[in-house]
Image 1 (cartoon, protein in one colour):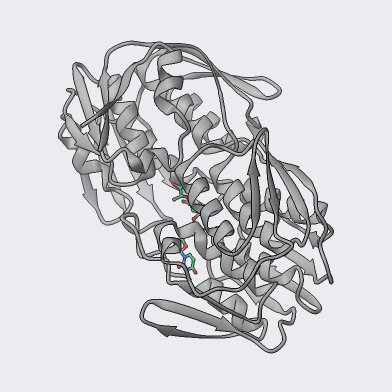
Image 2 (cartoon, rainbow, N blue to C red; image 1 turned 90 degrees about the vertical axis):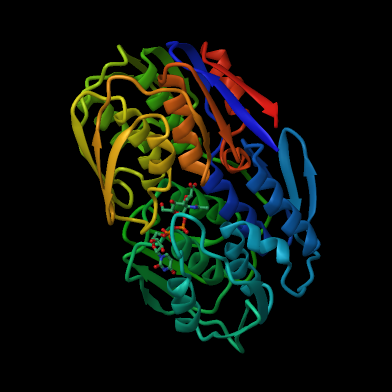
Length: 415
Ligand code: EPZ
C-alpha cells in the first residue's frame, strides 16, 4: 500500500494547471455507449475512476485508444451480464441510462453506499419507470427492462446530479420528449448536454432547473473537450489559503468556482480573477467563517472536507453544515489526531480553530476527506503520514507532483 508523507509548515508559491473534470468525464464516457460511431474526448484526467470506467466500456465491447485524445468507438457493443467491477465506482450506475438507449434489458450491480452516505438510486429508478421501464433485484443485481422507452415528465424530489444525468442518457434515443423538473444544474450537467448535442441529441435547458430532451433516432461521432475540474481547482485554492503564499491556478473556468472564490474572500484571502485562472494569496492566518453545503451554485459538498481542514487552524470558530450527504464528516476523527477541536452534531460540525495543528499518522476515509488531510498536513507542524491514499488517486492526478511544484514538501512512499 502507498502513503503520503508530508512535512508541514511551508508556504506555497507558483502556478499549477488544473486537469479535466472527473465528474464531467465519467458521465460523458457512459454517454459514448449511445453513439454508434467514433468519438474523440480531450482533456481526460488520468484517474483511477476513469480507468475503471474505461475497463467497463471495454467489457461491453467499446474500442478505445488512449492518446492526446481518448478515442472511443461504441458501434459494436454487446449487452452482457452485470460486471462486478461496476460495483467499485458509483459512477458506473450511469452506464444503465446509456445502455437502456441501446438494449431493452440491462443488469448492473446495485451501487453500494460509501462512507459519505447510503447514496440510494431511487430517483434514477423513478425516472426510468416514468419512461415505461420496470426493475427487479436479485442477489445485489438490479435489472431494468422495457418494451418501449417513451419520453415523459419527471420531477426529481432532490436535484440529484446522477439521476439528472442518468435520465438524460436514457432519454436521448427514447420516443418522444422527456422533461426533467427540479434537475441538477451543476456545470457537469451542462458539459454532458453539450457533448450529447454535439453528437446530434436535442437537449435544451441544461444549467437550468428544467431540462427538455427530444428523443432522436441516432447519434453520430463527435469531438469534445471536458471542462476543467472545479473541485481540483478549489482544493488547490484552499491549500494556498491555508498555508499562506501566492499561487496562480490555471486552466479553470472562474464562473464554476464562484462560491469558493467568495468564501475565500470572506476569510480575508485575496483572489484575483483572470480569464481562465485565479491568483490566490494569503498570509495563512485566516479568520473562520460558517459554510453550508448546497447543490450548485451553493458551496460544493465536495469542498467541505478541504474547507474544514483549513478552518481547523483558523482564527475563531466556524460552523459547517453538510446538507447534501448524511455522513460526510469522516475526516473529523482524523483531523482530531492532529489536534483539531471539532464537535459534530448530526449534519453540523463546530470547528474551533487551534493555534497549531501537529503532524500525525492519519488515513483517507474517502476521496475528499483524503484531500482535506493533505491540506491539514501542509498547514501542520511536523510530519503527517496519510494512509489509504488510493481514495485520493480516484480524483486527483499526480497531486503530490503538483504540490511539490508549488514548494510543498510531500512524497509518495510504499508502506
Ligand atoms: C455526484 O454524486 C458526484 N459524483 C459527487 O462527487 C458529488 O458529491 C455529488 O454529485 C453532489 O454534488 C459524480 O459526479 C461521479 P447526487 P451523485 O445524486 O450523483 C441523494 C466526489 O467527491 N440521492 O446529487 O451520487 C444522495 O443520497 C463525489 O467527486 C437520493 O436520495 O450525487 C445524496 O444525499 C462524491 N436518491 C444527494 O441526493 C437518488 O436517487 C446528492 O446525491 C440519488 C441521490
